[in-house]
Amino acid sequence: MLMVIRMFVVVLMLSSRGVLVLVGVGVGLVLVFVLVHQIAVSVSMSVSNRRMGVLVGMPDHC
Image (spheres, rainbow, N blue to C red):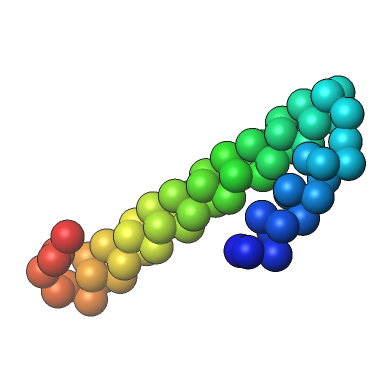
């Protein structure tokens, strides 16, 4: 994580305003994508766990 921040600072120092905006938008999109991916993975895990519980006949703990 520190390496990413250092790279970001270097890019900020080297870049002009337009490149800065592009980099900011790109980083924002990557962060949003990672968040959505994490949420999707957790939701699918919980859904599959519920299905397994229903199939096995165990009570639902969620």
